Each structure stands twice: as C-alpha cells, then as structure tokens.
Image (cartoon, rainbow, N blue to C red):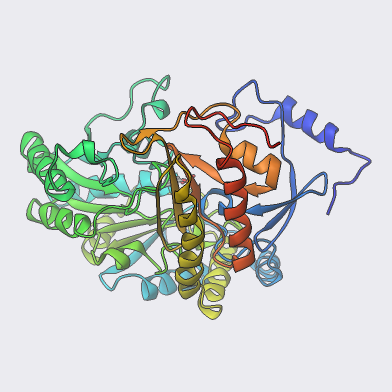
Length: 453
Ligand code: PLP
C-alpha cells in the first residue's frame, strides 16, 4: 500500500528529519525508509517498495505482520476495557489469564509474573527484584551484579550498566556501581580463553570473581542465554548448567534475559528449556506480543515472588503494568504460536535457513555461520586463519543489501544477523540467502563492496 500522495514521500521524510530523534542514526544519514504496511514477512514502504523482513523488526514479529485475528482481539479489548491500573489490589481479567498462561508454559519452578512494557523495564525490575529479595531476607549487602562483556540488557541505568559495550555507556555520566563484567562465552573467539576449554576458563573466571567480590556481596548474575546484540553468541552446552551450579553454591540468583530468546525464537517457549537450567528470574518482552503492542513480563520463582510480595509488597510499579489490551494481544499471540505449531516451525525453517546460510562459507570473508532455531549469524572476517574481524565500512553491509535486494538483515558486532518471523517460508529463506550472497560475493577482505558489473 503506497502512501497518500497528497502528503508525498519526500514530505514525510522531510518531516521525519525535522522532528524525530531516531536511536543510533548518524547525523550524516539523510535517507529514511518509511514503512506503511506489513503482512507476514513482507513490509511495504511509502514508495510502494516491498521488503523481506529477515530481522523481525528487532528480534521479534514471531507470528508475522498484519494479522487480522490479533487486530480483532485488540479492537474488542479496547471497546471493553482499554486500560486500568494493576497497582494495589486492582487487577483485570486479561492480565490474570495471561499470568496463568505464562506460568503454564514456563519452566515449572517459575510461579509469579510481574508485567512491564518492554525489555529494558524488565531488566531494571529484575535487578531491583534480586537486590530486594536479598534485602527482605536479611542480606542487604548483596548488591553486586555479575554481567558479561558484549551483553545487551537494554537502556536503563541498571540493565544499561550490565550491558557490556562501552559505546552504550560513554557520555551518559556515572553508570550504576557494583557491576562486574566477565568474558563472553564465545567459542569462535578462542583467543579469549588462553588455550583452555572455554567453559573451564569461564567457570574459573566466575569463581575467581565471586571470591574477589565476596559471595555475601553479590545479588545476581544476569545473562542472555544466547547473546543477541553481541553477535548471536551461542555458549557451549555445558556453560549455563555449570554457571548455575556455581551461583547456587554461593546463594547468587541467576537472571536470564530472555527478551530475545523467549516465545519460540529458539524452538522452545524459553531458552532456559533449551539449556536445561532453572533461572530464578526470567525477563521477557518482544515475542510475547510479536510486537503488536509493547509488553514485557518478568517471571520469578516462588521464593523470589514470596519475598517481593511479603509485608508492604514490592515498591516498584510501571503505569502500564498488567495493561489489559497488551495482555489480550499477548494471549492471542501465544495462541497463534501454539495453534500454528510455530515452536516446531522455528526448528524446521531455522534448520532450512541455516543450511542455506552455510553455503556462504565458500566466500573467504565468511568465518562462521551459527544458529539456534530462528536466530542466525554469519560472522565476517578479513582473514579466516586469524579470524580478524571484517572492517565494517559505511554504508554498512545491511544498508547495501537492503537497497540492492529489498532484504532487511542487521549487523551485530561483525556478524550479519537474521531473526525472521517464525512464519517465514522456504522461498523467503532462499531469497534472504541469495540476497546476502549477491552482496557478500562482491565484498573484499577490506570490507569494500565492489559494484556489480
Ligand atoms: N535485553 C535484550 C537481550 C535485548 O536484546 C533487548 C533489546 O533488543 C533488551 C533487553 C531491551 O528491550 P527493549 O528495547 O524492549 O527495552
């Protein structure tokens, strides 16, 4: 659907440039890609050009864009009860139904749900919950948070500090004190592990850090089960179970930031089920509504829930906590994931897409191709032997791929990353691979893309 031409595409772009502050947009970029419609994995811009959404927006869009069934549910809920608070004793039927649903699909030990509007809010809540849990249980000095380099936990000051990229800290003044960063579990970057087995190295580092800070001062360790923004980093299978063992021994809570991985992205409802671990707190957002409206949910154990709800209750609340329209949309979204078998679909289409992406390994700049379910990365190197990262020049490879082929992929830390809707078809997967090949095969080891002749 093209835009109303009485407004005009250039007029829209110009109004955008005049008024909208876009996250992470360099000042020199004047181009605007103005989306006006979406259906399944396809997006349409104001010029009427169609795109293949191979990133699911920002790691979501599980059920695909433009679903009438979800639109109907949202409209009906807005007619019935669009919003009321969930502070104090107030609640609503949709938030209650959603909490029951989440507990039924979550690992058995998670029994309580705290609603937010997104992932950053969820991580702020999780960090506060961990500290408050210990405070309520007579250990107020347990304040330290262990995180990892290359982690991304959103943009609050708590989660933002736990985020392991300097670029997200610089210029924002002092970050939150009492946060320690460890090495990411990134087997491809073997130079990080001093020639040791990666998990052995990482567990020794964790134990040494706990020893240095003192277990009695540490509230929690927070981690994405699979690091997304850091470059789709998949840890060795034994990493999380061994981390869990060390944390439990030291009374330290384990927070899984599953903002990306929950609700089908890895072929299970939660990545905790994929890695067979039992985090004390799981933070979710994104896929809970496939992005139709903003919502997040933090799931906690009986023990954490009990300490938060005890006495005067948990002194932290967001205005949109338990939003009935968002909850109704989430219920409809989860029902679609279930009815359409999208957890299984993530595994089959994920394996299919991976097989396609693996064919790119014949290109000298492709160092590694990795995936879990519908999270995919193609790591780019300038030298396969040394694994030196490919320089990422401007315009960035994803911009060139989009302009030339209409396929939207993203770069994360020297990898091209794909996280498409789980409803992607085989033809669309083929198109994504062909689009990447058409640009990568013209890309030199210096990062320069040569023109098609
Ligand atoms: N945690 C992870 C792992 C994420 O990838 C993101 C966003 O991409 C967030 C937290 C922040 O979520 P939001 O952007 O909804 O605040």
